[in-house]
Image (cartoon, rainbow, N blue to C red):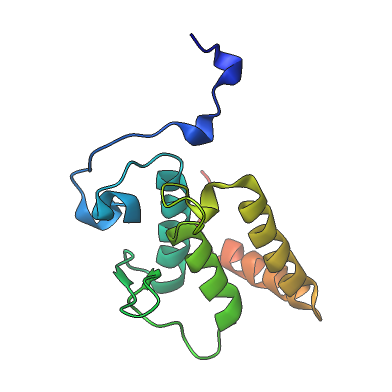
Length: 143
């Protein structure tokens, strides 16, 4: 019998689907066991919702077999940065079809570093802080 210390939470798998079709992960759609990828799918879906103000809808590429959002990114966005985020969070790592790249801590760290590097170029971080402050200023104050 394995102890709790021997169990890696990232290796725990479930089988089944959930009622909300738009929140079904790629693994659920493919009928394979899923685990932490439900969290990474949720992160991708939340990012998508913040970008597009709508729920994510994904499609599998006919040639690449990689999953991606159906709606294209806007032309002035950093396409490489966002494509990498969605590709990592939606697709398996290729080595083990039941492991999703985004469920690996190093993949999430690499995504965070790529976004931090992007923000550190020029004065983007300062610009984002300024925009967030402007948004905060127009929100109603607490009573």
